[in-house]
Each structure stands twice: as structure tokens, then as C-alpha cells.
Length: 348
Image (cartoon, rainbow, N blue to C red):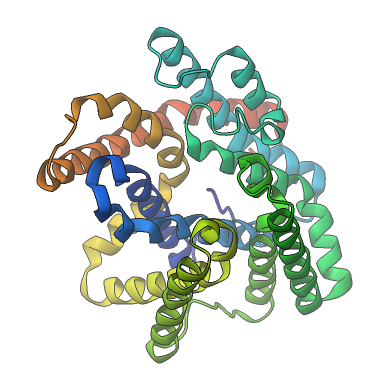
């Protein structure tokens, strides 16, 4: 996702890039392709939590965040135009050849008019990853209100209140036995605390230059171990509810591990560092297209392929997805610029 206003914070681009790569690998290395080895990539889902944190962080640094009218138009243009272009493309392709059974006109309209976030039947249409767009758009819609609340409550009480709301929501949907519904467990309240924590970190950076991921290795190392150990513990205690209860350890472990990797790449592997930043630049486009690329390439992987064959297929699929993401960004850029100029002539 775009984090306008924090381009000079190198870890933000690097973190976005590696987060989306982890999500892509998580989706590509599923059980149907690599069998039990897929368990080794379960950490990839943690990329969503860092994405949410960085979204709140970036919005607080945006120079348009204090003006709700300009904020809404600018943010929604940058997110919705590529999103609508991709969903339209996916709808047309799916009409020609069915890659997403049941994803017809109703599902397409659900994306255009946002009501898919309330309908579990279509929330993952045209790619299961697109549920995230509903959640992040909801965060954008309430961001001005959240910003006002943080100013009134103070950052600490603001984040604590968000944690209480998210925890209360998680406990409620678990007690009601409705966590099986994607529309319920992907609702904004489930992720509110991460977004608000990112906002608080953004405010702290503006105030004092504090960056939580810019800590020494003796802090980040134990944090990474503790986070991943917490994920393993949740998986052992509540294996059917890891996607509900492992958010906190996932976020801590994944962020700390990426911070360590970022520091190591800056010192010893500048090309890998540049690759991570590059992926950050196309992260939104890669997020949009990668599941469609998987659906189109999956038939070329024979059933029963061994681990070596599946690995080669994944490498080809990831490389193809990156290429398609770059092409899609180039095609979408002039459309985004035109719409932005029409709606925000003073700021475009």
C-alpha cells in the first residue's frame, strides 16, 4: 500500500516489499502444491499485520491527513482507481474463462460499491486476498475520526482503547462461533488495534523521530524469537483459531525479523536491500495481481508434482507476478494521474 509522506523512511518501503512477498509465498506455497511443507510458510500471513501497521503509520505522516476532504479524495483515488481497474480486468478475464466460479456480475458490483465486505459469499471473489481492500478502505474512511480521537485521548490511551475494542470483538465472535465467516473475522474491528498502533507510531516519529523498528539487535532478536514462539504456542493451544488470536505475536515477530533483515541487507547485501525497496514500490500492484496470476498458471502444474517441480513453478509464478505488477502499475499510473488531477487540481 502507498504510504505517502514517509518515503524517506527506508524500512517502510523495505517492510512493505517483504510483507507482500511473504503473502505471495504464503498463497503460492499451499498444501495442494507443496504438501506438508506449506506449514513452513505459515508465517507469511503475518505480512498482513505489518501492512496494517505501516498503513496507519504512513497516513499520520501524510501532509494531507489534517484535511479530511483532500485526504479522502487523494487516498481513495490512489487505492480505488488501481483496485477498480484490476477488478474490472479480472471480471472480464473470468467472463472469458472461469478462474473464479460464482464470481459474476453481483460479485463485481460488490467490489465497486463496497458491499462485498458484508457478504461472505463474495468477499474473496476475484482473488481471496481482496478481502483486505474492504478492511483498509474502512480504515481510511474512519481515519479522520481516529486522528481526532488520538489528539483528544493521547496516544497511549488511544491505542489501549483500540486494543480493548479489537480484543472484545475477537472474544465476541469466538464465543458466538462465527469466526468461520470471512466477512466477520475480516471486519475492521479485528484489525483496528494494529492500524491505531501504526498511527501512534507515526505521531511519535513526527514528534521525536522515534522508530520502533530502529532498535539494536539485542532487542530485535529476542522480540523476533518471542513473537514466533507466541505464534507456535497459539497454533498448539487453538489450532483452529490461529488467524484470530495470533495477530499480536505475528506482528511482533515478523516486524522484528524484518528489521533485523533490513539492517543486515543495508550493511552486507545492498542488492537484496534494493530488491526489497523495489518490491515495496510495486507492493500494492503485486498484491492485486498475484492471485490472478496463480489461477492462470496453476493448470500448468501437474497433480502430484514433486517438491522440486513445485519449487520451480513457484519461482516462475512469483517472477511472472512481479512482471505483471510492473506492467499493471505502468498502465494504471496515467489513469490515476488523470483522475487525481480532475479531483485535486491544486495538489496533483
